[in-house]
Length: 228
Image (tube, rainbow, N blue to C red; front, side, top):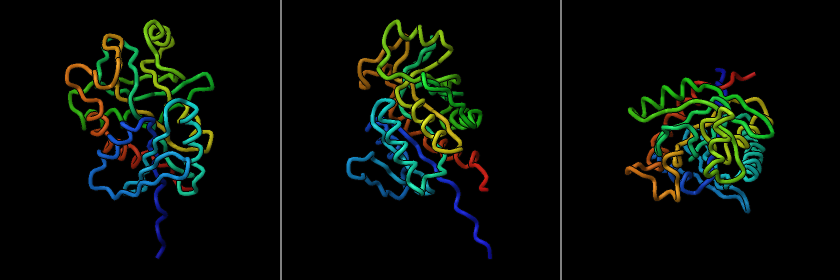
């Protein structure tokens, strides 16, 4: 009897320890096989060939960590999803809102995301009543403050973070694969963040990030590239 090949895996990339912890705790009941290579990024493997990678902060750290992860033969064909927190750029955004990128962009290039409509649908189902915004997400090499928001908004971007663009560009340069980015707003024009603990209105961005993990699994099941 012919054996079906194993499905291509999923690599979920985030930058911060608090994001990594939220995603891991959202994976309740999964088998933990976390590991840290000497000097390397932290990875947590769940059931079903899903790796959660903490890259470190900033585009250079994201590029290095994702390059190293995808060099692993087990992840060579992995779908890649960038997630974590972001700064919202559009008026009316609030902490705890979700952003699904239609594309990510930075000075090195633009990457189109795959399966955005599915992500929006699944996020609305997982978190009813939570606002989900779609549009371009731009990359930055620093924390964006004040008037710079307006400048970035004028480019058409709806949110900014430091890793998504670098993560997805690195991923597609390493080989053809589905890619996407989903971020949780912690900082918005009318709600500028001082630190994560000051998120207003009792909204917990960590709780939101924890709750979205099953939507990433659903996205992965539906966008796998056919094996050649």
